[in-house]
Image (cartoon, rainbow, N blue to C red; front, side, top):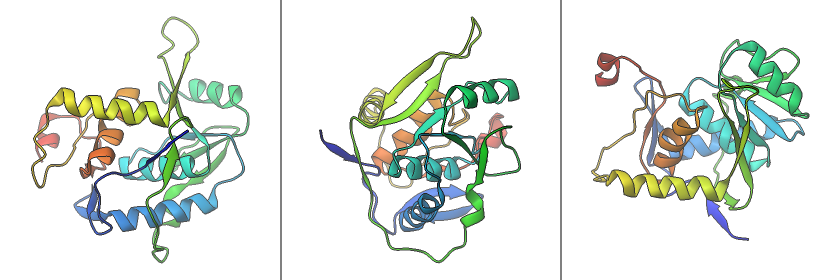
Length: 213
């Protein structure tokens, strides 16, 4: 078994994300991950409903640190979320706002923001560790799970990069319109940038003018 770093090609003071016009450095991100990791309960699964892409990334990294498997729901319909929560015991819910899932313990990841920064190193994750479970839409029945290991997610990120033939120019960042809970969104707006040192935009703009801005 081998381990792969969570982040590639970032320096400690390198730009990791744009959040509402604010630059977030790699060191700040790693500190946020460490702080959030310490707050997580003993569990096996986490339903990450963070709408802000940066906070989703913090929760995703913290879950990997604790060996908690991130559940990626096919929708935010309360009935679907409750169904997934009941199916996976020892599950809690991670949010960055007032929403939650009935019956699940809820943690607001933003509640720990502003704590003094902690110097941290980039974590390494075993390539065979299960990182996430994505679900089909359930349009033809109950949503079906698809298990993703950390190694498989890294591999897809590398193939995506090669397939897009990206020109890694200084200042390039990733802006995405698809939610990070979607498997395609996780692969392109989370895994691709963190594996190639690209800053990511924390929002989820939809209309062309919003994307342009």
